[in-house]
Image 1 (cartoon, rainbow, N blue to C red):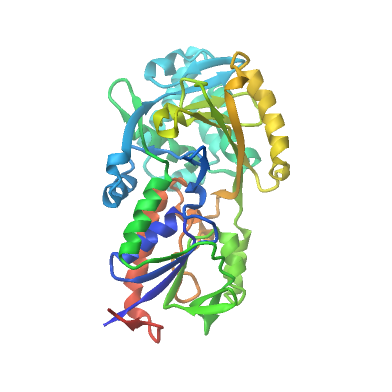
Image 2 (image 1 turned 45 degrees about the vertical axis):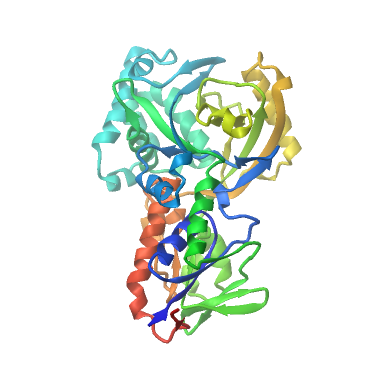
Length: 448
C-alpha cells in the first residue's frame, strides 16, 4: 500500500478544511501558508491580550457544515447562539428593520412600497432555480418586484455597500442568495434572526481543526510563500519554495485566481489567462474598539451615499463583551471595486475621513470611549461574477493534470461565507479522492 502525498497552498478556512477531509482518508498532507498564522480572511489580531477577528464573520444557526465542524473540532462548548437585530440609518434617523411589524411600519417607505418590499423577500423564497436569476440584472429584478421607492431606499444602498461601482453588471443571484440564506435562520412568529459565535473568535474553529489535522500527520508551514507550482509533462509534480523543489503526487490551490495564475508560468496559457482576468472586490474595514456600546444593532445599513463606509457592524451585539475583555467592537466596512482609489489611502487618511462621518451619524457618542481605530484591508475578498460568465468558472480539476483548485470564484451562486467555503472544500476533497486511483508514476511513499 502507498500513501498519496498532497500539497495544499493556502491556509485559510478552505485550505484547513480540505486538509482535514483528505487526512481523514489517510492522505499525507502538507499545507503552505505565506502568512504568520492560518486563517486568511478569517485570521485574527491581538489587542490587550484578546484575540479579535480582523474582519466580521456571520455564522448562522442554519449553517450545517460549520456547525458540524464545530462538533468535530471539539469546540461546540465555545459556541453561543444569539438573536440579533438590524437597522437602517436614513436621513439622520435610526430605524428597526427586523420583524414583519418593522417591515410594515418602516417610515422611509409608504404602505405600498412596504408591501412590495415584502413581496421581494417572498419571491426569493419561491424561486428555486438560480439559473433564472443569473440572466437577469439584479437592478431589473428588484425594480420589477419592489418598485422604484423600495429600490432607492433599501436595495440600492445595499448594492452600493456590497458591490461599490460594479453593481450594474451583477446578476440577480446575489440578492436572491442572500435573501434565501438569511431567511433560513429566522425562527418563530417574531422572525428573530439567530446567529452564533465562538469564544475567542472565528479562529477558534480553524485552530481546532488544524490541531485535529496535526494529530493525523498533517504538516503546516507558516511564513512559507510558494514561488512556483512545478509542472512537468503537463502535470503538477510539486512546489518550489526557498529555491528548492518539494515533490508531491498532487497540488491543490486555495488561492485567489490571479495569484494562482502567477504560480504556474509553465501551465496552459488559456487557463492562466482565465485565472488572471478574474476580478475581485477588495475591502477597507476599520475596527473601532470602544469602552461603551454604540448601537442596539448587529448591523446598521446606511442609505446615505455620502458616507464612505457602507454599514456599521457592532459584533458585540452578537458576541458577549465578556469574551473580549469588556470591549465593544464596531466594524466600518467599505467594499472596493478593483479600480477604487481608496485602496491606496493611508491608514491616517482613512481614519480622518471615516471619523468625520462617524461623528455626523453619532453626535452624542462620547469619543472618550474610543480606545483604538485599527484599519484592516484586503485585496481579494469577493469575486465579481458578471452576467453571462458562467463558462469562466474554473473546474476543480484544472487543465493541468493533478493540479486542483478551490476558491470563492467557484462556489457561485452561493455566497463567500464560511458555510459555503467549507462545503466546497469537502467537494474538492471528494474529487481528489476519486481521482487518486488514476494517478500513475507518482511520488508516493510507503505507508506507515
